[in-house]
Amino acid sequence: MRSVLAVWVAVGCCCGCSSSAYDADYAKRIAAHRTASEFAPLRPQGQQVADGLAELRIPTQFVNQLDGTETPNCATPPFLREFPGFSAAYEALVVVSGTEHRAILTVGAVPAAERRRDEVEASILDQVKAEEGFAKSAWKKGREVVDEDGATRTWDVLELAGKQPFVTRDPSNEDRVEKKLLGVTEIWVSADPKQTACVILAWRMPDDIAGNVPLSTLATLTARTARVPPAKP
Image 1 (tube, rainbow, N blue to C red):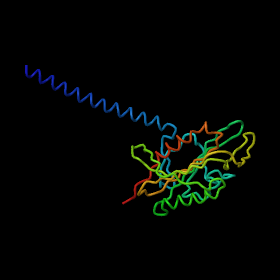
Image 2: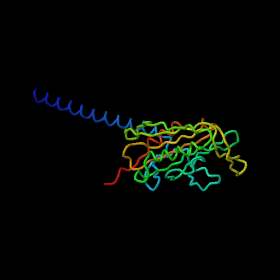
Image 3: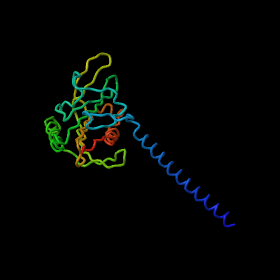
Image 4: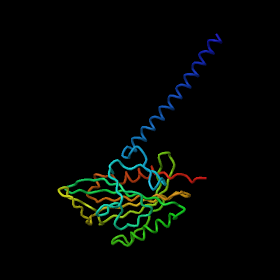
């Protein structure tokens, strides 16, 4: 009788262990699915920028890559031509009421050994304040986001809303025209302590396409995927 009881106890223990392992695996797969769904608006693979100083995932809507040789130049904000550590820009084209508008993401990275973060931010702010309407601009410090691995990252953000230059085009011809429209620019600068490089993300789009490009969501998601390799020993 004791041997039979021992067998049943052993079977129960095995089933319990098997059930616990299954539950843990199931929870892990559910979490992975939720993460994949959350980041679905971004490209599945990270894009290296600034010769590997950083990596991040670009939104799928931003299909065209720019290098600053366009006419007129769309790669960097017109009031921020000296873009710290400029690497590349990406654009999303949206046609509204017969006019082609564009949302732009400009990416840069500066080695910490080359310039401190406060110097990068000062350079950006000085240029922005020279633009009409943005003289009283100021950084919003310490915006926290949780990255894909669950770690908390810190960014400083400069928000610029109001009339500013944007490049538009009538689809019936090839001429691009720069005109002042109501819109928004958000400049994100990574602010983690002891980071080996400072990442700069500048988002720009006119209000006319605000309903087509979810800037707030994309800016946060992209910042959450930004990775800076640790310092080499």
